[in-house]
Image (tube, rainbow over all chains, first blue to last red; front, side, top):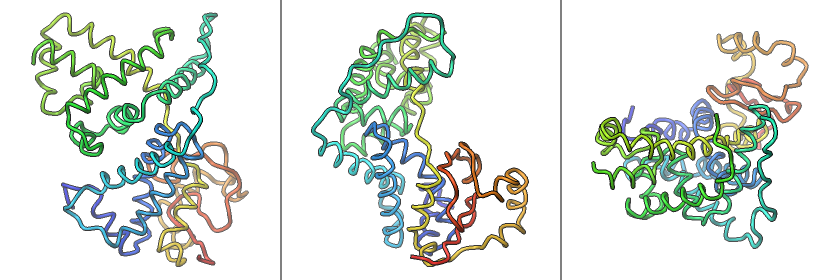
Length: 183
Length: 144
């Protein structure tokens, strides 16, 4: 087993046409891909399109994969982000045309509903961020990449990454400032 | 680690130490426990972290997974263990016990855990022919 790249054995299996390796790699990567695309694009249909396209490229590229040059997960993230940016550049209208709904100050709603409402507000706030700030938050907070991996993916220094993250978090805090602090 | 760097660190990465740069994590934790003001700073960032975490990920549907599997080389060729082989395996028997009549009826509910190990899956409706619920076999049959 290659400790440096945890996906290497599966990618080799996929290249050999091993059905078990195909299923295992899909199980391991698809949820993360879909999550990344959804958080970048704020559109469930486009997110599925991106995730599917990335995996199709994985099937095509697996036989050509050369371990050691880069980690497979890094390459896959890069492909996903490029596809997301292609779609973001094609958009002419803002993703949300109406202002977020204000929080109801009435009796405490069901916990599940409250969490869902917060999630929807966060999604709107994220969609309002500049693309690079959004990417930094998605990679570091949601994909939980290390700062080194995230900076490398974005092609920036760690200092620049931290600047993007700080600005993004400041903007998100402002956009969500009217939300009640959870108990 | 000093107050300025600690503030910059949590402003960028939030209050969860697991997200802090590995090279600075121990020093930042020591600073957090030693400095009374550091806790208040971290608490403000944790509120935002909690809000961000409330945005739950989109889970893959069975339809999406099947479409991607069907396009992979071994399943395009119709290769892979068939249903009988899976049935005889321990995984197949355990999964069958868990799903039972629902499998036989060809209908799946709104949520089905375990189609792929460790993942939650949202069912999209009646399964297409030849596709296992348990994710361990995909007998495309006709290929292509």
